[in-house]
Image (cartoon, rainbow, N blue to C red; front, top):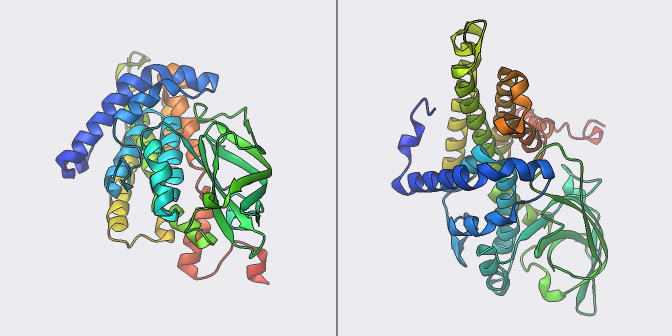
Length: 389
């Protein structure tokens, strides 16, 4: 339900994009995703269909990519989020983070070398930044890179790397031992010393697998260093360009859970009447719809500010914090409204709810975003005790 008719502002191209992705999701992803999710396997059978959608590479211009606007890229995340979070994460990692890093930080030769095959999904990508001891403070990463005789030798440990166990092209960040700066590198599949295992036992986004990666004297050609990545400030350029995806995805999960809950209470009877006829249920639905509408407005304004080049880090933090809080609250409320049936994968809400727990965690958890906003409000950093000493 688009209560404020916000989608009426979309262009014909955006409406076509929305409807095409929605149809693909409902016809191709939804019938199979619960089985893959339960088995904790990625549905590779969907790759041909995803390629045919023409969305791989999202905001990248050229190299076989669509060059989508910020709002168009947001629509992709929203519509995929409405269907399944695992597929949306695959697209975010491959299209935005891995391909985006090569596009923004690579040389023309590097872009031409890797991006066309990635745009066709002939090669899949991963983005290796986080480490076992460095998540929200990834600026302090410890994986090292040393230049020796025309090759970079990389050692360290990466964790929670989406598609990191299977990707053909891994964009990896390591600290140069010569100057202490963070540099970006391309590690191609089957490079000796790159040892990845799948992290098992997840309770959310089970159809996209994360790798735990040990790098043991991995040697890559000097030409595999991203030409324009020479400090963590350059890494931040990629992170800034891809900010917002989690907010749009949260909106998608929220819309899906609201629709599922509304449809359920309309037909489910208890105590001789439809659940929808009870005041308590109607109040819950009204609150859920208000939260969905709030998220819509935030995401649309975010896209406007991104296009204008005025979207800041604190704005991203506020948007992600708010959308994740509301998306997760909607999912939990919807699950409760379905009672025991809300626990069944066949009804989809449990998958959306646990996937929202993941969205609330990656790209910075709720508390970190709250501190970023708090620092913007007060001018005081509360990130470490050192700030108060």
